[in-house]
Length: 462
Image (cartoon, rainbow, N blue to C red):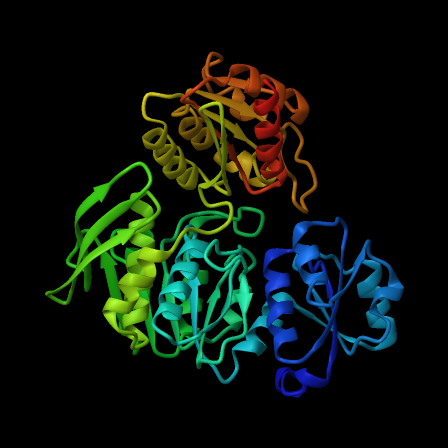
């Protein structure tokens, strides 16, 4: 089926249900660049939808049966249930309905694709690799889970043979991509709504590796990767390792971490490549950049061009994104929602703030994740000077009895946490509390990001 419609993209009308999502909007952009006529719907308007309207996409707010009329193919977000009125209408009209992963897999056909996977760091690593390849003059296609600050977009149909894609493991669908190469940054338990234990996650990544054709780039520092390498021992895949220990192919040493930058020396198979400089902070970002470097080398890009491209990388949206500064108070927004991500983000925030305080507004993501990681979430959030806990962002989950943000608050010192479900009240409390030199961090994968500009506005009026 994929070959049948993918070869006809320039003459097709395609409708996206849930087009406002980062993954869906990126696929729509690439398909439009290949000639398809795009329409789409979403429940709420957004700046993403505004940018799609600027491309002459037909965008509707709300899901209605008539929205699919005239479409030859309907692509649904993984968050869209079969009971959605547009999905029902498409089925009744005999219009083929496919998921996001199948649509993306079709775009990879005929390209030298690289899929970037892992529990953490996928978006940043995919973005770094893309910018590095662009700087090497290779003009890759790409589809990323967030917009890059360098270009302001999350997807592009390039003229080159390479297609770089962020591979989301949350529902297991990334096994349909069959890329030429892959990057796996790390492996931890997550997405507990779909996976009951770490063994299931390990099995999934092992299965993903069996779909890769040529090479995989993996972090030798990560214990999850160590388990993976044992599982795929004897594979014909070329395995390229990177890290700071265990004698990797690409070694990072002489690491320097500053509040807003970072750097390390790179040595590849015993040969010193030079110093890798980043315009963003964090040890984890040095590892992400090393992954991008190793993948770029495997793809044949010149080392100097890769280093220059990575040095120019200015970050991805919602990845320690500085939203502004008012009266000496800096407001930063970050997507982190897993304990490991929160730990890394607060460490960077602490370095950035210096003698100032780190004030966190955290919105837990999903009831299942909150229940599974309450202890670790409390532990990592405890590193902030004060944390305001919003109520859980449910995504597409139904509530779990007894699971609220209070389960995290109860595990923290009462002096360092405020459980406050009201967003307006959190804004007023944070604005009243913050003083010159403080850093306010809006943290989480839900709509907590909307608070950053409101905090800045209220600080201006303070």
